[in-house]
Image (cartoon, rainbow, N blue to C red; front, side):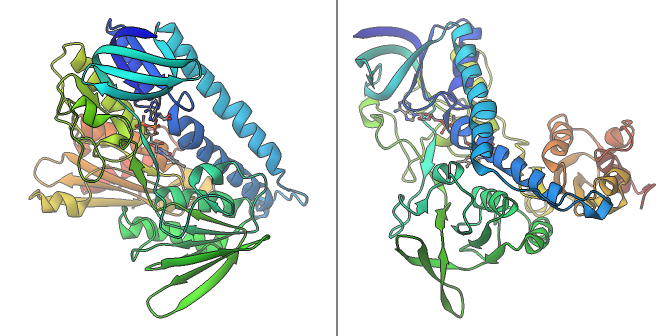
Length: 463
Ligand SMILES: Cc1cc2nc3c(=O)[nH]c(=O)nc-3n(C[C@H](O)[C@H](O)[C@H](O)COP(=O)(O)OP(=O)(O)OC[C@H]3O[C@@H](n4cnc5c(N)ncnc54)[C@H](O)[C@@H]3O)c2cc1C
């Protein structure tokens, strides 16, 4: 079969489906191709299912450990099959069905199959119903990423990637995680809450190496209480699998040891899906790390082919992919816009959560800004105490002369939602006075941002 389309989108993750919808809204005739699941990694095997398991874990722990304020529940247990069914039927499926509905509502042609470029204006899709050649005026590459495999740890059996770890049938008794980044730490936290004995092996000298040490320390304290063991500067060397368990040998600075577990989860990073999509045939250049090079308007080396999301540089986050998508679709529609990554929030959904946006103190200083930090502890917030969540703090990074907010970091309960206010403040160039004079509801965790702003002004009420 042969077809023609104005804009071809390859991949239907938070990059692809958003690009397709925005392009259609702006009047383009759009075709989207997806080889696995509509909704991509995030909705099917990433953000959404992981948050569902994390929530199940929290609820179990809350139910088991509420004696501190007089709630006693002696017979709490986890029916993990029911948890999985809830996650699939009530969380993932309604969302992915919803995306399909949105694509259809916007009159976007959906083709299920695997697309490869065969020339700069043509792609060939291998689908269930045979091959379709699609000629396009513009294309958007949104093929996302997949887990990296390390030598000697081939996925399968008791060696899990994040996708397999999200769909286990039972909570493992013992789980070893190789890689203490966001994905490994979140899944480790979820399974520890659900009752597993979790050990995390991290190669660098800090768990969650992309976040500042003082934020991570708060999470580490909580991990200790949950019984999660963390080895840093730990190098996983080999595994040997038996019928009932798997042994992992790893070395730290001074020693080598072997742990026995039900499963080993490898979360050492992700790589872009760019190797087998015909980039050479399309004339699109790719960098040595597999990422597609784009300009400020997401154009690749072929100006009519764009790339967004996990296949280009920048944080591999769903909301960043969706942002890229909207800008790229607008560029194709003739709008004079370009990318601006001023304040992309990054969130780690551990317990407590970490959330950051904009610059850290060190980053701002290294760019020559004269900045100060104002840090307000959750311990001094009434709502945090009423939630039994006094751990953590909110920090604003503020330019000395102008009082403009250039960054913020939060660790504590609710950080994932609270960061939105700081993100807006950075994006809108607000000062700490703007925040301090904004009336925040009481009692709420959001008041800590107002308190940090007052602190930055030198007029703290609650410290
Ligand atoms: C366990 C886990 C948890 C995560 N949690 C979060 C989180 O909480 N917050 C967050 O912001 N991010 C999170 N992420 C990251 C997030 O999922 C990604 O950044 C996001 O999905 C990237 O979107 P994308 O559109 O670029 O690509 P993807 O979501 O990877 O989608 C790409 C799609 O393209 C399809 N495809 C690939 N090649 C072809 C082809 N040739 N033809 C047709 N289709 C093709 C793929 O099947 C896939 O469906 C998580 C990731 C994982 C793995």
